[in-house]
Image (cartoon, rainbow, N blue to C red; front, side, top):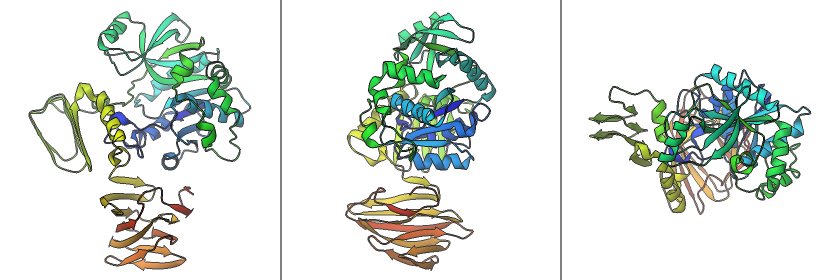
Length: 462
């Protein structure tokens, strides 16, 4: 059996914790592992590790690879040049399996951001889905609805099968009254976005119902690179697998997911799975609360003091504060869309950005300059790189730094500094046992993370 993990997306409804360049699937929102890592580990008894395939946006590919290495996974990573929704992503991943395997095996497709705690029950459901898939069905995983949710699509089931049901049709996200009717009917289930089918069935159904995707797959060649060429992907439609295939196919079946499930798609869904205090609150970070009930209050850094609130979400990160009614947390996406329309950086990147070697925090920026604190973990190093548009000035705050600059090595201690000229080939390294922290001041006509030319890198980012 193969597994395709959909690891793209921006997690816009969990802004400001989730951002374009470091979205929710890469964050340890619940537990010690990120949602992506938890998804991979959940498959360990079902799928051979080498048959796990993550597909993600190229801007997340290095982070995905790094997180797989952290949990000692040998899964492969396909990089999309842009987001095109789930149908092109699944089709391209299926094409990779077709090109690299001579067997017609089942393929399970999973989002990377689901929270499932009862792994044994999940495994049992997958086994049932696999048996149905062997009968040439595309199997979807339905969730028994526990309340009239308006943020999910629904599946209406028809006659019973050995391990599940035939699907009568799929329903769009309903209003609340319609959702209540679905629950009363007893034959409607939440659409989880998980699927299972044989490789040949995926290929046949995509060919039949999504020819504008299938025709482009003929140009894909994974023999040299797992990065999808821009020229191929730009011709793909931006469409979900539900619209492109599932709603048109006559081969759809459904199994009922036996385990717990949460897609962590909103702050309310995160509130639902977190442990609560006696007042029904989820409180994390530097928070003082008085007379607060049934709310989620989150502070990343600053002191947040709240009083007299009920049924609210309040989230503080280093550069943003978001507040909303708990029941309207789906509308956080509208705030995210406004950030995008105004081209604000708070949509894209956190103040603190994590990298394989450590992290950096932006302190101040303006026209032609940017100031950061960079923290390099012991025995780690940044890539050997250069910049076409900016010079840099480094001041060591704590620890000792090894600076490689145009082929020469410089040892710096706390209080010492060095200039990195425009286009100079350089690297900041910490071969020592203690954390290294420096101040970096960038100056130039273009200040952006994409102004990096890498020559060597310990984390495979060249």
